[in-house]
Structure formats: C-alpha cells, structure tokens
Image 1 (tube, rainbow, N blue to C red):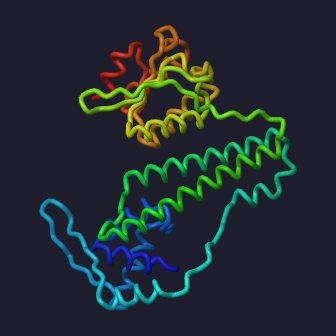
Image 2: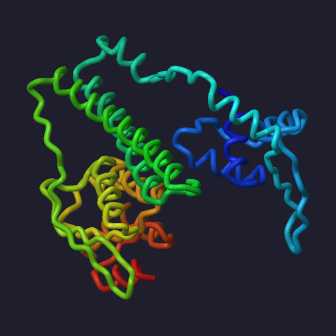
Image 3: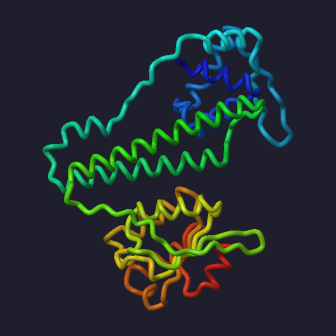
Length: 305
C-alpha cells in the first residue's frame, strides 16, 4: 500500500491542501506515513502526472495563496480498483520484542524496568487513541455505514493497545511471580464544574504520586470526565516530587504539558520555599501549564481562567 492510495481516499472525501493532508496523517492512528512535506508533495505530483488529481490555486487576502487538490474521475476509478484488490496481511513490527528476545542477560531489576518502560509507552498510546476516538478528528460522516466503519477502525486500534497492555502485564507476572503487582487506581476526587468550566480536584490517593504512570492515570481521569484541568492536593504527592534530583516533578509535569492538562498543586508555603525547589516553583508559575499555589481559591481561579 502506498501513500498515494491513502491520499486518493482522503481527496475522495474532501478536496484538501497539502498542509491539510499532512495534518490528517499526523492525527491518524492507522494511516502510518510520516506525512512530511516531501513525501506528500511528491505523491501529489505523481498523482497529477497520472491525471488522478487536479489542483486549483486560491488567492487569499492577507495570506499566502493555497493550492487545493481535488480527485478526478480517473482518480476515483483508481481508488476503487485498489479498494477491491486483495488486502495485505498485517505487518507486525515491534522493536520491543527484539529487545525482549535477548533480555535474559539483564538482571531482574533491569528487566523489570524495561517492561515498566514499555508498559508506560503503551499506556500513553492507549490514552491518545481514546482521546482521538472521543474527538473523532478527521472522520468522515457521510453515511451511517461510513460512520460505523470508522468507529470500528478506532475500536480496532484501541483493542490492539489493550491487548498489548494485557500481554506485557502477563509477561511481568510470569517472570516475577513473587512480585506484588497492584493497580494504584484508588483515588478520591471531585469533579468541580463552575460556570460551564470543569476541573478535577484530587483529594487523596492510596499511594503518593511519584511516577509518570501516576501522571498518566490522572490524565486518563481528566479525559474520562471531559476535563482538561486538574487540582492536586499536597497530601497526594510523594516527597520525591520536591527533590529535583529525582526528576519526579519534571517527568510528571512534562506529561501534563504533552497531553494538554492544565494542573495546579496546593503546596504549603514552607515547602515551596525549600532550596532549589523554590527556583523551579518560580519558573513553572510563569507558564500556563503547571503552577503551585498556597490556597485552593488561588488555584481554582487560575484553572478556570
């Protein structure tokens, strides 16, 4: 399968610029091309040479002109010809399996860390896929059947990540039978909604927040309740968060930034003023992603801005 077939499919849905095609590829979970400009425009040039697409230059006031590509009747025939051709078997390429194949040389601690890192990556992808499914970005909806087809494609991607997550957990369980594995998903929280604006207030947890996985669990909690703001109380945070050499704070905050969660932590003033953490607090409070406050009132006012 080539990127040209995918482009014909998109253009059969709607005429698009090269930039719009790039965004669709970037946001898609199953159209796996990088979507870089060279790849897209080379494919479009080839499609034009074959009379499968045409383009129209549209001039805009106060903006650069844009070139809009449209599929031709020959292009639709070529697309249908590809659609009825024999499908390829799925190509399974998992770098982690190659790493795992030779991992017997690692210590138990090193192997456990490798599995945890991979599990964390799968969790990230699962959260992203669920969010894409919720937003239904770049999904055509021209008929009930087409909507169902795209719904099932999304379910395929979600189930793939779920299966991989279950597999890595089963692998860990069999390798380390004596290791206690507990899901830290017991969180006490409130969903606050004020003037049509919503945030999650985390009150307590069974264990203090201390890992990137904990940050991912909170991100998933926010998305579950369709909120993009989070208030975290001091009692839920590990002491390692306030020790910069552990990198706990930096790693967790980066996850909130990456996934568009606006987070505020309620921290006692004596803790904020400690050593090098004070410098980090001053720096983060200049930004719009993560801030530290001494009161819930201040934090809520910022979250609801």
